[in-house]
Length: 234
Image (cartoon, rainbow, N blue to C red; front, side):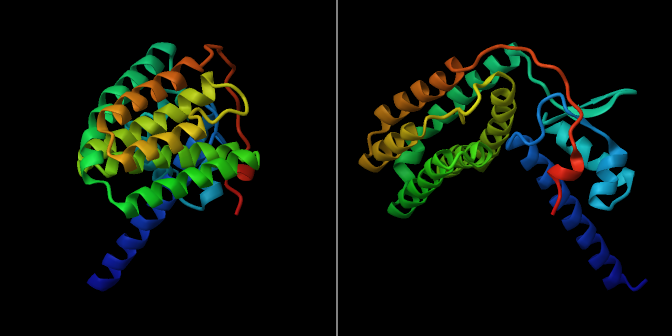
C-alpha cells in the first residue's frame, strides 16, 4: 500500500474511533447508558461494525476519564460513583469553577454573553419539552464553555471531565425529571457576568454548585444490561 494511502487509512481509523468514543461518552452523559450498565465488547463491536480490539481500546480511553470501569473477568461497565466520590467531584468543581470566575469576568465579551444565553435558552427549551437527556448535556456544555472563557485550556479540560462525572452522579443520585442545574441559575449567572460583578458571580457559582449537590438523594440501584442496539441505532 502506498505511503499516502496508509496515512489516509490511519486518519480514517482515528476519526472512526473518535466518533465511537464520542457516541458512547454522549450516551453516558445523557443517561441513555446508566451507571452500572454492562458494556459487552462483542455487542459493541457488532453495533459499531469494528473489531473487539478496537472497542477495547476505546473502553480503555473511557476508563481513563472514569466514565467506564474495567473489571477483570467481568469486563466493562458504566462507572457507578460512590457517595464519597460524588462529594469529592462537587468539591473539586467548586474549587476550580469558582476560582476561574474572576478571569472569566475579565475576559468575557458581548459575543460570549450571547453564546452563554443561547445555551441557557436551549437548556430551558429542552426541559420544557421533557427532553431531560438533552438538557443535561446542554447544562454541562454551559459549564464547560464558561471554563473555556477563562483562557486556561488545562483547567477547562479538567472542568469538562468533572462535568461528565457529575452526569454519572446525577444519574445515580439525582431526582427523576431534574437536570441537576436550575436553568434560572444560569440566566442569573450570565447576568452577573455581563455586569462585571466578579465577586457576586463567584459567590453565586459556589451557591449554585452546592445546591446541585444538596439536591442529590443517596439511593443504591441495581446494575442493568442495556439494549446497545436501540441506544446506538442510527
